[in-house]
Image (tube, rainbow, N blue to C red):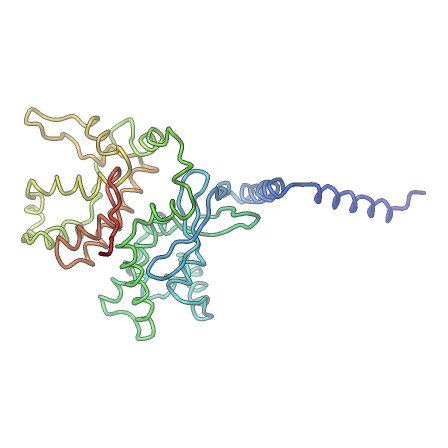
Length: 345
């Protein structure tokens, strides 16, 4: 008669021996395959792997970051939480659980109910949507790098509206410090430098970016630029913003040139040139369609909204056009420009 106990022991020993013979990379791939199987069963997208990792220093706060295998730059949820809240307090965790019960789950650093009016569904479904990725043998939750200025802006708008409690003002101050830090560095460039990703970019990266950003067919016109963009633009330029909606469409010619510089030249490399090439013009040389109508629904349009949110946040933080231009060139430089580096004499 076969001793079932001995068979089980031998099988266990064999499994341990096989596990010990695996390389670290093989163990990580097995762990990722198992996690992806669980994710697929739950109807979730597969987990991407972090190919480059590091830390960024924003306003004196170190936040773990990574570049995923599809090129997405992410900041860890724990890192953002530490930078914003200082610690994961029990009160904050209770707030997050309560928000999840309400059917609108938000990250811990945006859990206070007084922030809710400033968080739109577009943000929840866009830049504030958490990303799960594999870092080594760990499964990590993070957010797109573009989410950080949006998070800070939510806290600052709540403070400006006077809705925060006294004990929450310190969190708004932390958001202000982070926002100022972002005004001095371009977050994407900083992550690329911290992880070494800039040395590993594929030679065909530009072609892939254009394919992802620009649609082959014209999209239906939908109002995309927020009113705050134009209000802040007019304020910084010293122009009177029209009171009547009909008059708001009659904008100075310079607005278009500024928007090309502030938005499209900084959205992704080569995007504005390709949009201009694809967009027909009338006999007077004017564009027949809005440039954003050529942006793809899944990549180009969401990136435009995220970029506009960052631009508006910088506008609101500036007292005049010169200050805004300085912060914009530091935080969101044009693609192909040499980043501004301050040198002390």
